[in-house]
Amino acid sequence: MNVPENLKYTNDHEWALVEEDVATVGITEYAAGELGDVVYVELPEVGATAAKGDSIGTIEAVKTVADIYSPLSGEIIEVNGALNDNSELINHDPFGEGWIVKIKLSDLSELSELLNHEDYKKLI
Image (cartoon, rainbow, N blue to C red; front, side):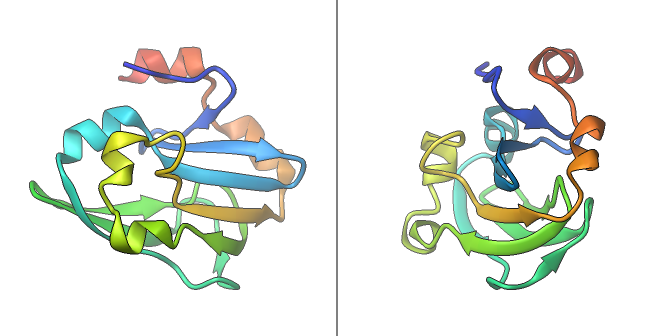
């Protein structure tokens, strides 16, 4: 199971790559595997505000529908429009082309509440 060392993780299996005050967010390889084949992704609106732990969209898979939870608070500044036509990118490349949103962070102190790669490995 791929768990990149440069990312932060949530207990709900989202990941965040933080560069300065912007976090790129997606779901982990583990979560994608548990969901099965992703068939649709409901993305939030650009400009929407997300609080840490809020549902910011949903992923519909063959097995189930799951919420996407924001790992950090801030403003949605970009969504991955490629998922509209190619939702399976989440299954094929969850840490790359399968990213979901970018969030301009409003509270960098929340980063300390996320899991590092070692703690996430223990969780799964």
